[in-house]
Image (cartoon, rainbow, N blue to C red):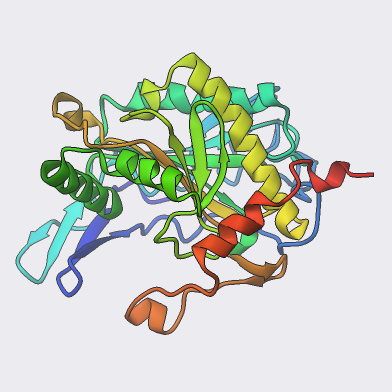
Length: 348
C-alpha cells in the first residue's frame, strides 16, 4: 500500500467533493451472492477468513484469538496519517484538491462467522453498541467526523461476510454530513425546533410510516425514503451525539436494533443486505460550537426490492437527474410492521 495520504477533489458542476483513494484498489475481496440463509455463509476456517479469530489478513497480520468484539486498523484505508500526500493541493475555481487525513478501522462484532446482529443475543448486541461508544469517545476529540457504518451483503459491496462494520474518521466534514449540518441549522433558525425531533413528533401524529417504537427509540420509514425498504431509527428525546446516550438508552437500543434486523431478515427470508450508518453532530473543532440543532439518527439503505435475489439498482435517470422509488414509503412501512418478530430460522 502507498505510504501517502489520499486526497479529495471538488466537482464545481454539482458542488460536491469526491475522495480519491489510490491505495484501495488492491484490497482483498471475499464477497458472495445474496442467498437464502440463516447467517453469513462464511468460511469458518481462519486460514481462509481474514476476519476470523487467528485469521491471517492480506497484510500478513494475524488477528487476535478474540472471543468477543475485535477492532483493528484497516489494512487498505482511505484515511491515513502519513507525512506526505499522493497529490498536490490545488485551489482554483475549477481545480480544487485537498489532502485528507484520518483513520479507518474494522469492527468485528463476534468471533462466530455464522452470526449476524439479527441472530446474536441481546448481550452480544449490547457489546457491539459499547464498542461503538468507546470508539466515538476515543476519536471525537481529534477528528471532525467519525462515521460508523456497516455494509451487509455482497450486493452492497461487502468484501467479507464475517459479522463486522467499519469506522472512518476524517479531519474534515464530508459532503453529506455537511449538508445535514446546514439543513438542520437552517431549520432550527427558522422554526426554533430541532428538525428531526419536530419530524418525529409529526410522524407520531400521522402514524402512517411508523414501524416499531419502545420507550427510547422509534423505527420508521422516512417520508422522503429512496431505497425500497429504507428506514431510520431515532431516539425519542433530543440526543446530539452517540456518546450522549445514557445506559438505559443503549440497552433499549440493543433490543430494538435486533428486533428491526430480524424483521428485515424475515422480509424475504434471507440474511438481509443493507448499508447502515450513524449520523450525529460533528466532532473535533465542532465540539466547542453549538450543535444543539442536530439529532442523532441511524439510517438503513437496503437494496432488495421484491425478493432475496432482486435488488434495486441506482441507474439511468437516477444517476443523472433525480432518484425515484418503486413502492410508497407507506406500503414499505406497513409491510415491515406486519412481519413476524421471530427470526425465520428459528421457526418450527
